[in-house]
Length: 286
Image (cartoon, rainbow, N blue to C red; front, side, top):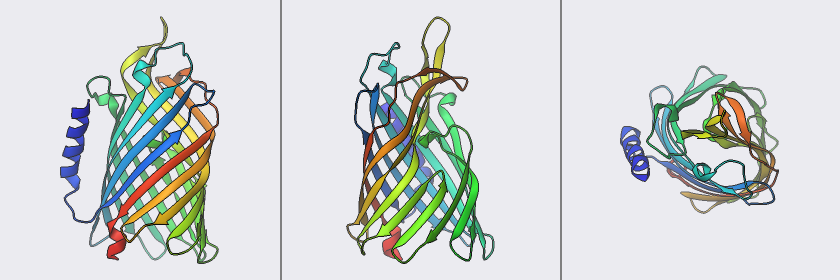
């Protein structure tokens, strides 16, 4: 399985990442085990390569995410093939300005998401994407559109709607769905974010898991809503590091067959922690 992942990463890199401007982000997230049936560790790495065009901006992205599930109670099913889920996504995004008030972004993101317990199959491939329009207002801006992102637990299209503005030079905010946040700039190197956002994954099971004589599971779906405080420290013009401390307001983890829930794990709201490291070459070139 590891060799297959390396091949996909290598092939995708040569498809789109031959530019010389790079943004890189590395994330580590952790939900500790408590009295419920599972905890998880989530790690991801993302590389973005923007290319300026005569009209608009074109962005190639490659990301890899891994969920490691830690089961803490005895389940009525075998969880040996449910301990690790992987996602490899290659994204093509285009941003452009329509006029003085309107701009838009369109993105297509073919994604391989699976527990990788056998060979990669066509059913492991999920097509994610988005279409979002943004309008400038007299005060702030407004966004509306559609989004599908299996890497945060959205297996179907969901609406995107938000309003963004600033109170002063140090405080700005975004209110809406799927994410809301308030950012406070402490000084030139430090800032705080108070947020609420989705977290999760949607993945194929390489081999269907028999639950009983009549039922089998083909997909795994984890959906959560987390709120917390994010501290961001600018190390230099290239590097930023951030720390998350939050709480899961909602967490649902289940197995599906034809989009129908056939098994649900015991899940409770609990603490959430994260670490983020970002390398941003673009900003230091501006």
